[in-house]
Structure formats: C-alpha cells, structure tokens
Length: 181
Image (cartoon, rainbow, N blue to C red; front, side, top):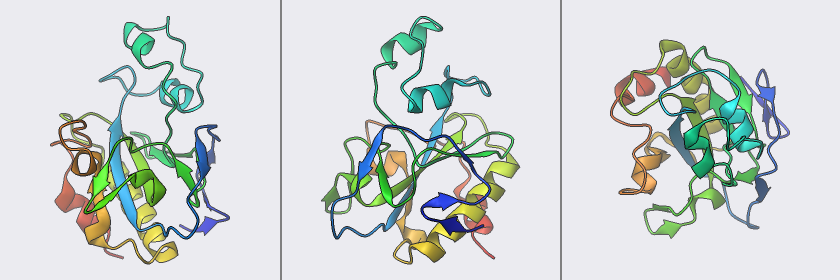
C-alpha cells in the first residue's frame, strides 16, 4: 500500500467536509484506532458514510436523532469485508478524537490519523480487518516515521472515561502480528 498526495491507493475516496488544516509545524506522530457501527451493533449500509458527510437522516433510526448534527469524520474506515473508505487526506486534520490527551499533549486531532474499524466493543473484528489495518499502519509508519508502534493507540486510550473503542473485542496481539512485514 502507498500514499499519494494524502490519499491511500486502493481506498475508495468519499470526501468529508468535516476536516481542516493541521496547525503549522505539527508533525503527524500518532495513530488512533476507533470502532464504529451504525445503528449500534449493525454492520453494512450507508450510515457511517452518511454521518461523516453530514447526511445522516435523523428520522431513519431512533439513535440517529441524537447524532445527526455531529460534525465528525475519520481519515479511513475499514469495513467488515476489508473495504477501505477514505474520508480525509492524511495530511489534513480529521475530526475523530474529540476531547483527548496523549501524554502531555491535548487536541489529538492536530497530530494524529484516525482509522475507524466497522465493529463494536464486544464482537470480534474480522480477520480481513486486521490484515488491512496492519497494511495501512505499515504504510502510514513509512510515510510518517514518527508513528512508532508505541504511538498506535485506541480511542479509549486518549479519551478514557469518555470512549471505550475499539473495545475489549479488539485483539491487540493480532494487530501487532499484522504490523510485521
């Protein structure tokens, strides 16, 4: 896998308006792994893309009424079948982390890449998702050398008490095996 002008080759581009420029002189040095399903616990369908493009219909599902006005995005989504969908070029700031802290730094969106896995905290992720996530992470680490294995975290690590994803069902040992070339 390779990155060209901020876009991952082979990913389907679905640009999100929920992005902006990173602060000047801030290096990308953190990878944040998330988990998402819309409606919660359901996979497939257009709803994650609709959320990240501000097109989620609040009347379509009771859960959507509470989140339809959110302005959020991630750089990349890895669906259950391994499809890669990119919303924000990596050199731009996606709005994925919210109120967050890594070490002594806040505002993790400024210096991180956010990858969403289609899934839930309590259901195993698909093998193909680990394979794709490993390949994407290797490409990001080559492109942004400051991202080391100790700088790959879950959303729960940078927003403890507020977020739980990717959750206990995420197999960190398997992910680290996939990081090997």
